[in-house]
Amino acid sequence: MNIDVSGIRERVAEQAALLERIRTEVHKVVVGQEELVSRMLIALLCRGHVLLEGVPGLAKTTLVKTLAGVIRVGFQRLQFTPDLLPADLIGTLIYNQQKADFTVKKGPIFSNLILADEINRAPSKVQSALLEAMQERQVTIGDTTYPLPDPFLVMATQNPIEQEGTYPLPEAQIDRFMLKLHVDYLTPEQELEMVDRAMGGMLQKVEPVVEPAQLAEACDVVQMIYIDEKVKRYVIDLVFATRDPRKYELADLAPLLEYGASPRASIYLSEAARAQAFLKGRGFVTPQDVKDIAFDVLRHRVLLTYEAEAEEVTADDVIAKVLARVPVP
Image (cartoon, rainbow, N blue to C red; front, side):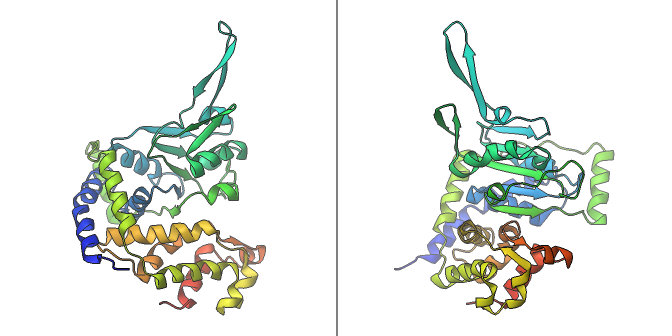
């Protein structure tokens, strides 16, 4: 099969201005966090859901709201609290006494971009209400199933599970997030710039600079990016090394791993590597693209044993060893 990589690269180059407009608008509000913004763009290009984790005050919510403001789509912010009910998200049936029947009242989830703010502060029954929506992009109310608008993305924020008033997300739901991103503190220089903006009244509002059709076109170009069979096999090897490390000469990791990454990891890692190549302006995927995005795709899909927790080994530590020791094509 002949692949016109140069032609694909030209299509990628045509989309560079679109990405630059998004970055410029986002950084009117968000200081620094260049890598984090790039990861959010990857999620947009792959139509994948994102989970942002960090302590309070790191502008997680601000980043999602700003990104939503850059794209001319519907946006809903849902504040997850302990008293939230599933019907508050997806909607419910309301009895109409005059007509003696039930009518559907759709919930706020019927929008394009959903900010699930502090998602792990609501109980599991509410978190599970998102399962069908995130996987199948549809919602069932009563006996009827309703499709969600296109595009549909959930961008959730959560505080570290060690904090008070948090509930761990069910494994089935956390696996539906394409990326799990760690939000860290700014550098001293970046934080100084943030303070100057706030004290000087320099906080700006963003304007919509991207239409849904333009975003859809960029997503289509990402799907065209060539990924070689050897790179696909590399993705599979990385994922399988988390499931059966002994087969990949990683026997020392076996006592640390309760469960390895799911099949979604193979799909999402391949798709995200394509988007990473897109951001780099290339028409093909390299093994380095896979490595660059592997932590964000795999860290929430690797379940560690109590032994690993006792030794203070993190999922990122395990992934780093897998990346270092699985042969690169």
